[in-house]
Length: 231
Length: 384
Image (cartoon, rainbow over all chains, first blue to last red; front, side, top):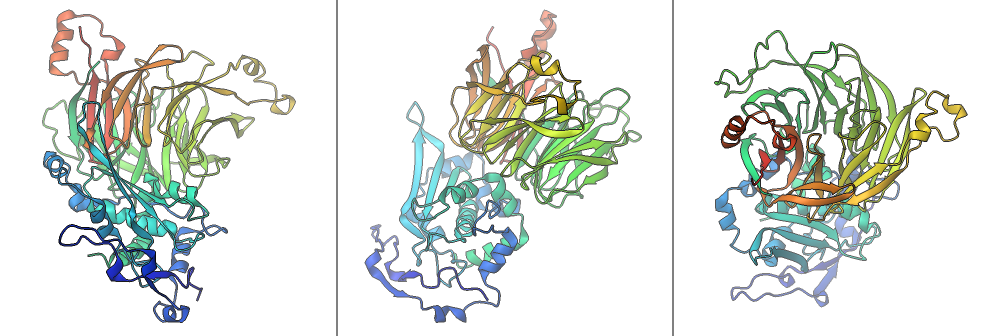
């Protein structure tokens, strides 16, 4: 069995993660609240015989450098987008005015499980609320444009993390399933946090590759495992 | 200049990936995310056939074989994420009259189609397929970074692979044949466009176009160029649409019959950027189409914008029409010019009254397909 790629990630405690408090005040987790690091031994028993890294790399044909262009393919499989995001009529244009904020995006994706650790992306600080941005633009007449962008910057736990594309894909699939279609989702690794930053970013935002990946049953299985912890 | 939506066809799928009007018949093919290709009549906009059951994953691209000489069959090629190219033929026995002319053709399945061949060889998703101008060759490209050139037999059942071209360093997104020459162009995730032609029984890379700063999603040739000339338009994730032209080939064509081994630089072509079209899009531009009638260019992309450009003088382009949210809030994956088969009510009457020869630009439509699963038909209209 292969070693986990990052055996000792830093872990944030649940109560320190940002939430929407009853008063609407936002609470941020900060790095001083890191309470524990996971000893390697604690993880060994937690995984099935084949590590996720192995299954992931076998199905996506990782290159020698651990991260080839073949890593990610993907897409919005039809089955995936049949939920709320399917509404495209005028009613949804009105619904859209109900604002979706960064906290809501954070709540949707911070509960995704890491593919390697029995922890969420929020706990591992892969997803951080200050790195989520919603950009709505206005046209020349000052009207808000229908289409908005959601930009999520992820922070891989280590700079050579070959699971970065899988994590990014999980976030994209989660958001595509949950957000109305007027949102354009951009997933990037945060600047300076990954050695193959531009390659990972290009893959994660290539519509055709994402679409094809989401037709891969094996990969979908891995993704649904990651998304199973979402509320 | 306003642009007007004249019709919308709900295809009842999650995504339209690609659309192709038949070069000479009133037929439209749609590549969809539900593993099928759909055929519509451009006279009625009704569905006439659904080609399904053979591909195991999304169909990404469709291409009609041009009719030429004795070849009278109606043949469609489909490229799928399942790694194969499908060849389909309309059953001429059971096909008796122009579908739609009876007026009651509202249901799918009026035409019988036969799946006659599956072209295997690509290692993974096939992203585009295109027939050459005379219908003798078929090009396909894939995430496996290769472009394949196939030769078809008379019956369209046997296909021989003539070449596997592997010069691209990343997946190949699009292939397009020159409208008159045996020249093929391919666009890639490696940000380049390559040109390919046959040289002494070998297919070789005859040119490379570097300039885009991100994935080149789609390319289309200028169909109105004179003999020996070539121009193409490309669109990219770098949010630009660019026109490229080939430097004169006269010096090369003169030596065409000398064996390649005796030529110093037998086949290479130099391509120059002629224009960056006025920048309107934000986000990746997924499709571009160059009209063979009016010479106009249309582009669509993730921002939901449909833009029409016109060349005012060589290399100088202006935007003549723009439509926001052309597929509501959805991304648009494909746009293609087509002959207008069905006249719109008001327009048709005017034409009849005047009895004048319609201008080429009044005889064309733009057809777009998006993530809303709709096929929209557009006309660029004129103020008189």
